[in-house]
Each structure stands twice: as structure tokens, then as C-alpha cells.
Image 1: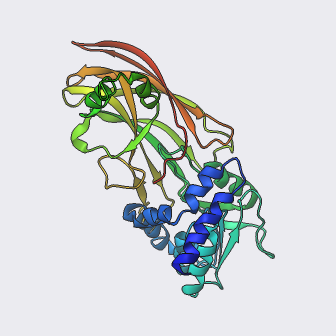
Image 2: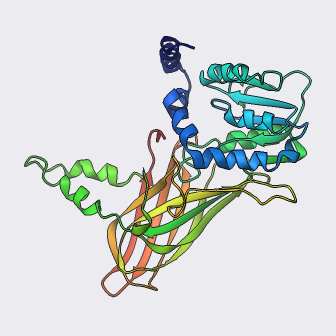
Length: 349
């Protein structure tokens, strides 16, 4: 495929007619997939989970939900799968098909273009033994494909089938953003004009960024988990209590969300975990930041308590709202606060 063809390929994605058009357009862009492929932590976790458990893949039928360029499908084929059905709804499926041919894997890997909710398995295949999918979004559930994976599970996965990854966990930690005060003050005087009104909508959006470990001030607290083998195929809605114990004195002005996912393993193998924690190696998901309106002046062993709720903000279920309640009593501050955050648009990796 020439560069001119690649340009035309990207332009064609602009014509998608779907409520999720913006979302799918972002994943039809080659640069999006280049970013994900260059995320070595992400790619190697899937590779290790597949290759270290190659016995689980021998002669099995595998479904790759949202295959992108097909890297997970190629891993599965190399691990010994009998057939791999790689489903991709955007025009990147054409690229995946060419990659499969270039690697002489077309006898094993079949790329199927379309939404997993609308396609059918190739003739002669009624069910699959394994579902592969890199379904996770920012803060685990934003912009993710979880419900598509659960749809495929309910429709095609065999009774003793496997899902990789099979569990996702969401975590919360308190931290200090040293640039927060300067960013807020910037809007008070922009070339002599008051633009504070611009700041308000931005302050209620979750941000995606990489948090250095030096900015962490508390321990981590488990928030929510989804086990893909048992979860119902319905929108993600939850409200979880949390308690964070302060480890270092400082000013907490943001709460940081991150996730990890676990892969099933054979009896002789150690399970593989992919973590997006600030304490782990960088991934393209980075962390999701919820900035506080009122800073918390904390010292070691203080407790920050609260509730975090998460629910879809639209019919597509890809954008999420967060409701955050905080209760804190310290030597310098007493805070009882509520704040709502709304994710809008797509967070391109």
C-alpha cells in the first residue's frame, strides 16, 4: 500500500455514518495504531500472555474483537491456534488483511470487516474457544469495547472458553499537581482580560496525563472490578466508597485513576498482569486525573474518605461521567465537597 493509498484510506474514514463515528474515526487513523504498537508494555503483556500459554491455544478457534492491525491475531496464530477470526469495523481492517497476507498467515487468520454485533462467524464455525481483545479505555471504562466483548462472549464463546484479559481492576490514589495553581490563575489575566469562565468547563473534565511517582501522596485504594467471564452485558454503573491513607505530607489537589488487567494462565504458568499504575512503566493509557476544587493539606496517616460513582454520559456508553464526594478533616483543612466530571469527545492515545 503506497503513501497515497494510505492518505485516501484515512480520508475514507471521514464518511462513517454512525452515532459512534468520531470514536471509530479515531481508531481508523494509522497514527493511533502506531502509538499502540509502540506501547511495548501493552503489546508485550498480550504477547507474553499468549506465548506463555501456547498450550491453551493449540488447535483452538480464537476471536479477536477489534483487531486493529491484527497483532493479537498474529500472536494467536503463531501460538498454534487452528483458526483466528479477526473482527474490525473500520477501514484499518484492509490494512490488517494485507499484514496477514504479508506474513503468510491467511490460512489461519481471517479478517472480518464490521461491528462484532453485526457480523457472523465464517461458514462451519458456530462457536469459539478463546476471545482476545484489547478492550480497555482510559480509567478502564472510558471509550472502551467492554460491551462488545461481552456480546461476543454471550453469542459465541464455548462453555469452557477463555477471555484474555479476563479481569479488569480500577484503582484510585491521591496526588499533587504542582502546575495546578498556575494553570488556574492563568485564566484570571489573559493579556489583561478575565477569562475565568473558560476555566470552569475544563475543570470538570477528567484529564489524561502521566503522573510521576514523586507526586503521589497516598496509598492506592481499590475502586471497582469487572470479571469478563461473569459480568452482565449492560452499561457500567457503580458507586464505591474509598479511603486513602496519606503517606507523605503535602497538598492533594487531584485524585488519580489507573487500572490493571489480568490474563488467565495454564496450571504451570504465572498469570500475566498489565498495569497502568504511576508506579509501573509508561503505557499509552497513562493515568486519568480528577482535579479537586479545594486542595487538601495533609500529613502522614491522615485519611481521605469519599465516594466515587461512574456512569455513562451518553447512549453510546463510551463517554463516562464521574461523581466525586470527598470528606476530609485535617489540621489545616476541613473539606466536605462534591464534584461532577464529564468526559466529552475521544481521548486519542
